[in-house]
Length: 495
Ligand SMILES: [Zn+2]
Image 1 (tube, rainbow, N blue to C red):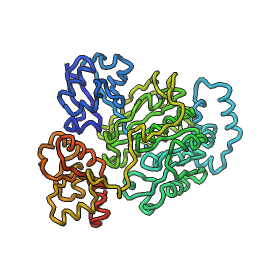
Image 2: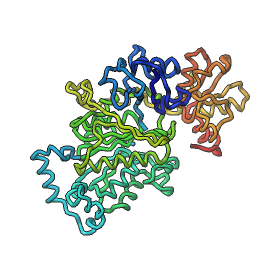
Image 3: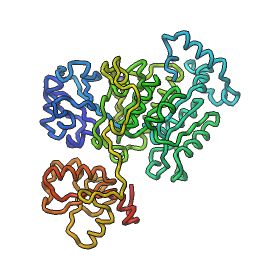
Image 4: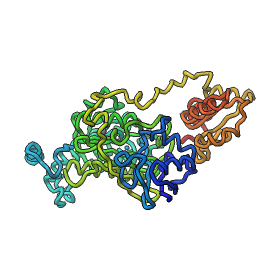
């Protein structure tokens, strides 16, 4: 009996780029084992050395997590679909919600009714809200009383901030420390061409104030850290996670759980989006879904993997929708549900999320009581300063240039993707990192090999892989082709 298995984007390099595969099997375990037989490389991404499914990979039969069914013994039949859902990184006064109001909540709502005043200008501005019964004057006052903190002013933060400002959310806080870069403009519509080189916070403030001068904008030019997260979050009703990396996602989650605040989650990669609302008081948290992060480098970032520009527009707008519903206390928030959006197929799928009774932070017996070191938790070692090149395993662009000019016999290997190669290359042969396990035998072990990618991350993994497979003289080009374009040949295209 063959079962349909849906393969997520980060794992498609290991399935010959196929997104749906028919695999035989009577149980989830059998199907996944047979999948691993068909595509040997996928095995290590699904299973740990002890033979258990990896904890950053969730497996669903239809919309149910197999952890809450019979795990890998869950039986499957022909009409079932198995989905593999890995974590991807790459953007309210919760008690006020609808039913089950208690006295305290009534007081809060009554206070807003009495204390918040809408001016004539605001009544006109929000008229299309005011005539919806679910919003009305009292809802608009709730929005005006609402305080929302956005983590990140990038692709997800752009539509999010713009729609929250337009909707009349009273106070919007933004945490970011980046400057606007030309490569941001393809999706970060809050910033314009003339903002390139300016802090994103300055440009965001101007855009949001331009949309709605009634909104208070508070900016925090800092990296979100374990030291500042709790105090930054304290003053806000809803936190919106629009970040692009795993350490910050776990940090945002933990700080929200500790403070009892809802976390409106969105993440994107290429054509895939994920959206949910994590509110540990009413449902699961991010750690219930993904107890541990994937190892560094397994899931590409948007800088490495790319993202279709309109996708953060869609996901960030859906996050704005959930924020507004939370502030209004209307509708069914996306608590306990994960929505997956596949833009290429135009498919929305909804999966049930459950609170994990063993969750280390929101479960009944938590082991995490304060914020931790999230870089360490995610296995990330701080990047080495460029001047600290380790001569045994690394080479700088200047040294490589000098050696090539001298006519040294150095074999340069490019491990990026073909579409990156087409943008710019050094004329070196190309074997993408994902194909290296199948193709490394094409390389001459006796030669000195210098491996490069865009920035040096993927090539470091490629160099380590080659060393493990008997190559004695392999070096990683520190900073990649981007450093080459910056410091050796400024006429080269950068991306
Ligand atoms: Zn949890």
